[in-house]
Length: 384
Length: 243
Ligand SMILES: Nc1ncnc2c1ncn2[C@@H]1O[C@H](COP(=O)(O)OP(=O)(O)OP(=O)(O)O)[C@@H](O)[C@H]1O
Ligand SMILES: [Mg+2]
Image (cartoon, rainbow over all chains, first blue to last red; front, side, top):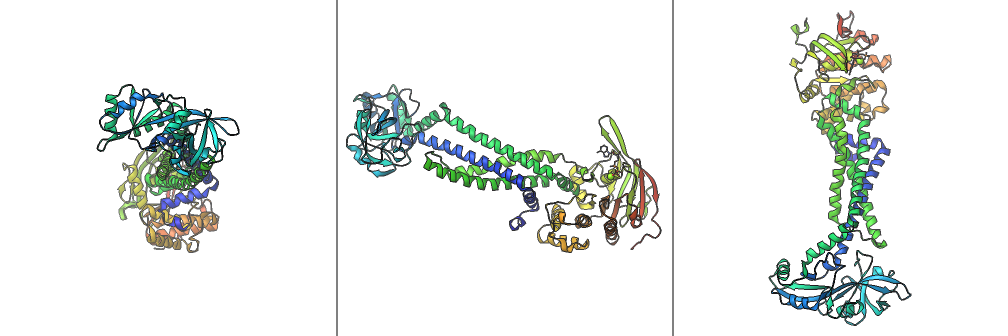
């Protein structure tokens, strides 16, 4: 009991009370661990999904996105016409405008069978919107007609083995010239990158159609100012800064589809279930030691002395449960990544979860504290 | 009526203490205008049939239970009217309790049990360890410092409880049937220990007991019946007085 010796007496009593009933301690820790892991995984999925919905926007070097009126997310929108390109180009403060195509298409695997994909067509000259995280091949090769790059994670899904393989997109040949890592789409359709020219061939777009205009601001012009200027001069379009567009897309996929809500509810459930389990076991421990608390009261201990013991029990349970739970969570996240789930667990999320766990356990302790507040020291003379 | 207060002021004193328990419609008059004063260095044995009000009186004297009417003085200080927190402080600084069922902390070792009491008074660290050792020496448990209560005999447990009660140096010790769970040898040992501690350190000691075997240790025996003091015996002839 060396570490316990350094604790104050209230902490020592708490440690001993917890260790006294190992089975109950096991249940307590299981409750905390369950809660920590569930919240970590659910919020990790939430963050993973959220960042994946906007990953192309976040990794494209544009200040402002121009889309057709009524756009609600990155993935689904109507095409724009060439006239908009010239209108935007003529807005003061604009340094550069590039067209960008995002369009669903069909991928025919070499061995037969179809998969839905999402074509991302970017300007190959500036490279604005080109794939990132390249692991194989070269995105510069996308200059060559009918070539594509996508994430290696989807090799199996798309029925190919790597760079050099061929498939068909909307009945047109496609050669793989590069692979990336960690570019996952939130929808079930993988992003497949191609040059604007190739993308136009793959999609059913007319030659003067595209999906977005990517705009760079002139020096000294902020994205917000630029967006405002474009809005003022170009009609029938929606204009966003990159940040706004990313947020709008995230919000759309996470909350209008219910996917985000499901994750939030599952995480909240973890908190509630963990809290209830801990409240239960702490309460049972408190009841077990009620006689001692009564004795303390009789001896002249104030209420806070006893609350401290109960809070120590809660905090120690939180610390042990969190330590175990977060380790398991990191293990799960690490292995889920290989299995395809995109779970993000950052240090700051782990820190937030630590305080959440502390909060959960201390809140659970309130049930016990409520009980001992009304303890009658006269109970000490009622023989055992 | 309060003859004790003439020579020495009473260490603890009840004046016209009445306690009525109310449970719904029914009322139980557990104490009926009790007067009792106990001097420092005096060992009083409180006897009476079951339900006569002994525990109630001890609780009221110990400032654990508020009387329905009447006053309790602890070292001359009026306890009635004090707030809950002040009463707790009064107990902490003046009164040591010993219980029939020991009320030890089962998860703490012997020395730690004593150190809890010291901790309440802010005595910590090495000072607490030393004081706990001294208290255990005093009750003959020097070799049991690191033993859990469950590994102590009944007599040893009660001695540990006494060590805990005395560690804070209370002027008043209240014990409710401290020997009821002990065999006669251990019962005598515990009572004589309490008596010695009262005599050598000038404490007022009130012991509730049914146990006739310990009559000889008392300076005075107070009989209580139906919440009233029935009879007040003088110190028995032949009682060993050490001072
Ligand atoms: N909390 C309570 N509520 C109602 N009545 C009570 C309560 N405590 C004690 N009484 C009643 O008060 C009377 C005195 O009880 P008390 O416990 O003081 O007796 P006692 O002399 O200590 O008895 P015993 O020798 O059995 O311990 C009894 O009639 C008892 O039933
Ligand atoms: Mg009693």
